[in-house]
Image 1 (cartoon, rainbow, N blue to C red):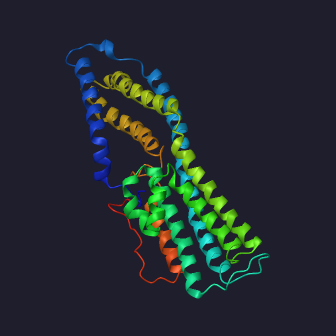
Image 2: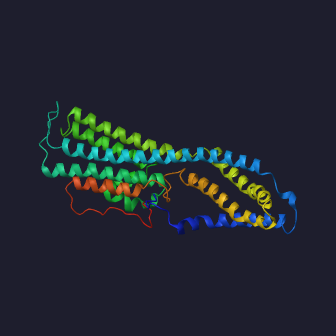
Image 3: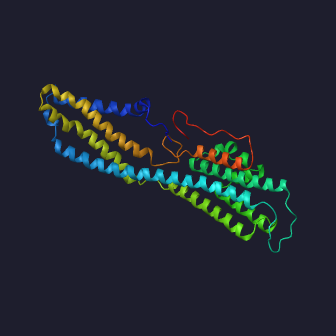
Length: 322
């Protein structure tokens, strides 16, 4: 996610110079054909070009709204993941404190060391889930050893790595851990167990929301025809402008080049902005900063465990927060 208030002009130029060059060459070609070669038949009336421009602007505006809605939906889902992560940590630490009155359970009192280890397992497995979900959405399984494995027991890490959808099975492992805490150790009563299971259900809902956006591409008919219509307008624009400028005098036809390039650049940039917002989980400049959010969750949960040696928050790299 780009975090600087204003785009750097170097970034704008790097992403625009090819299109600007193409617009300039095409406009200059039209001027040469109309002026020195005197083929005035290439000029077309301005009114239909202007009408097309209005239609294209409405169309790409509609498409961009849909693209932004996808990004906003994704960001809200990850905001829910952050909040649910904190809720999970509070429930794990405050519910699992001592033996509770569980009918039919005869278990020795849990020691402080045992409680601390169980807290660590539940919270570390959740951190692993956050990172596994991120890697799953970005299709980066090669980062498992660095991003997920450190938070799991080696045997569990290897078992989860072989799953088709590791985040799903990590949440299931959390549910199995809760069942054991209630049935075997008596560390959860029925109300606490149900409340924590609802938190896991919420995590499944949030994971499903991410997968819905990831696996449902932006409708291709909108994206494709937006691209086609913009280029159609770009091609016709100098043909409509040159007749208007020629009325001001033969030398004014060359004004077609700068004005055509400017208008074409504006339309193309609007189309590109929508295109780059279609898929918010691709680890690109305008995507949801899942890596930074996972690090925030890790810091919060490990600090709740009482740890002091914490990783630092991730900052932007070249104005981009990943």
